[in-house]
Image 1 (spheres, helix red, strand yellow):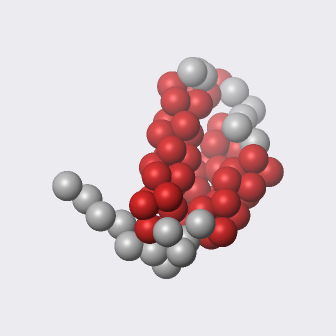
Image 2: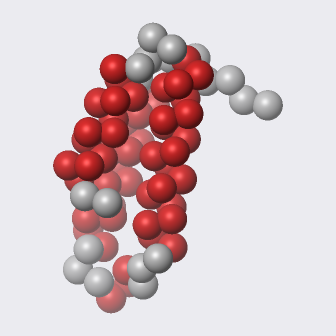
Length: 72
């Protein structure tokens, strides 16, 4: 998962923000995919660690996108 891929996915969420369900699903998928990416790597000794930090901070910006998030 690259920063550019994350930026594209965030833009897709913004583009779909008019539809709460779709936007929320895209956001959830992005979070899930990022967690899976971390789980696949032993990033403590990897130079990508700072990239993970950058990506995590970028992903957290999705919370600023205006759409309703319904939770059970």
